[in-house]
Length: 245
Ligand code: PGA
Image (cartoon, rainbow, N blue to C red; front, side, top):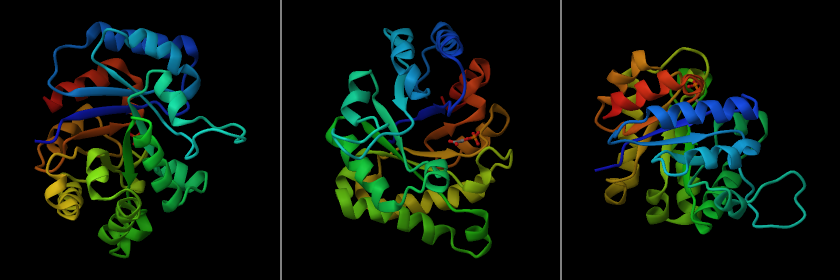
């Protein structure tokens, strides 16, 4: 059985004080959910949030990292540094990294590998654009994004990570994929992973809210959510986690 996971991607939002307040609200109100919760604050706030989470069961993750271990890479942060800051998870290949910062599949694969080498669990984000969907290319695009990582790290390592299917057209748009659309892609991903992927957590992301989470989470191959906007409100995020249990 894949482990249920609800991940909150805060993106580039919030002051240090707001990050502390939000994590505190989550810790104070967390219940014994049978779901793993993880939050992904802006890099600069990781240390502060790590202190707030200490002793709680909420895990910490980062939104981006370098594919390199150390060296002259101005502005970058390594997997070891994130691990030292208290992170257990890392997002790799988020569509905003791919489209706004030019991350290509091979870089995403390098990051996935570097993350695992440092003991972080990578959450590989994949998904098609609206145009690709309209052209009927959804499954092909998603398979290619996953296969590049599989070729780099091997099927076993790939399956020890987490995969988040996030249709690009659903991210931040308020337009969520239907449960059927999401399950179709999740089922295809599970099939692609074969017997090694039975326990791999497959998350859905893209405009997840408490009001649409129940139907999504009821799908056979959806093991949790990667939540953006709705993770910035403690009550809403906790409600989504509760719906996964
Ligand atoms: P959203 O973002 O929930 O705001 O659509 C999801 C994501 O970018 O991971």
